[in-house]
Length: 69
Image (cartoon, rainbow, N blue to C red; front, side, top):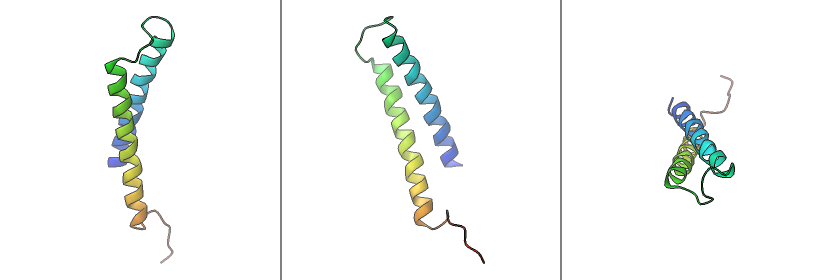
């Protein structure tokens, strides 16, 4: 459940960052990255790291393997 939550957060923050980037490249705003853009990028990065960390923990415990009983 934690992985799913973090994945959804990653998608939301990725979408926010993409919108900010699209605005900047369309010439509407200055070329410099704004604080909101940086926050969205950092939040997406943190969510992605949480997903990777959770999967690594699960794999390390051997819970991602299919074993026959």
